[in-house]
Image (cartoon, rainbow, N blue to C red; front, side):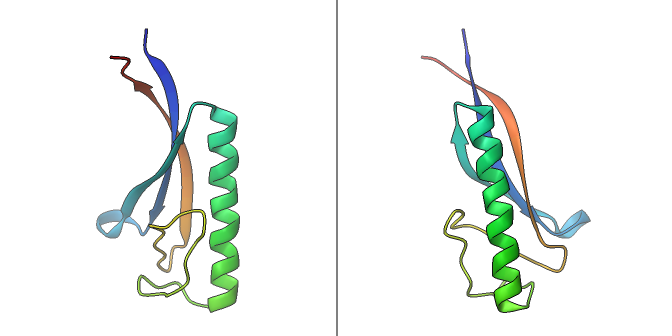
Length: 86
């Protein structure tokens, strides 16, 4: 039997300029959803502090080291996937 895990994904941009990245995985959907929510809150704080959406922004999200941000903002989702038990 396969175990379900929940992956938090970040994204920014739209259409052909959209960039997606993986952030972290959890065994609990609630923990993954909570983490995604906290990442989004932190991204909004960073925007308010720097007042810019920019790929070159030096502001870092302590919850997401790979975070990028453009004019569309930064968004986080949770996806369920199977973890192969070997």
